[in-house]
Length: 188
Image (cartoon, rainbow, N blue to C red; front, side, top):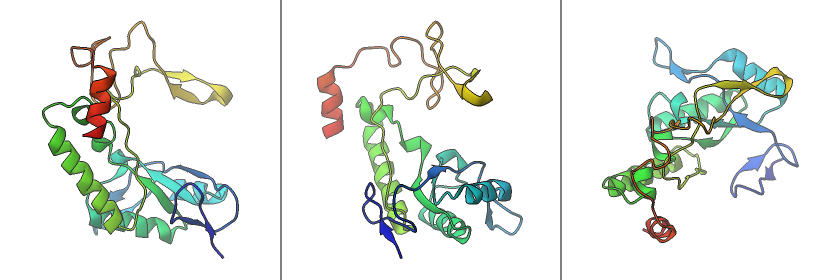
């Protein structure tokens, strides 16, 4: 029996209720024969937790194409895992689009191709973050609950962005952009 997922139309769960989903750990690589592989210990851990849905980070994908996306989906399905999101980190936070910079149309075309490739591969959900200068943090890991570590941001030296290299605080692109400009670029 399948249970329709309420938050992503068209996706179904194998059990009723809210299902556990998480980011897939480790890279997806090709072995000597060209077959895609994942870390078997990571997959076993997810299976032990009862995880049904995984997110694949863009930096985990060996190539961004419909055929590779399909291979990844099929490989993970062999392990009982389903993809709820497969990211392309080059197309997630796009200052060219958000700020209306010179490469905006090229980046929009690339995003449309990415969406088409996902659909062709049988992956029907993607996210887009309309952020002008990425995710700000420094490179230090800090201890948090239970001995785990997490990234953070020291506001005395915030000149770093995870997605787009180093920026100088406070203006990543040399000027302030108005709310009307940002909404206009979103509507574009």
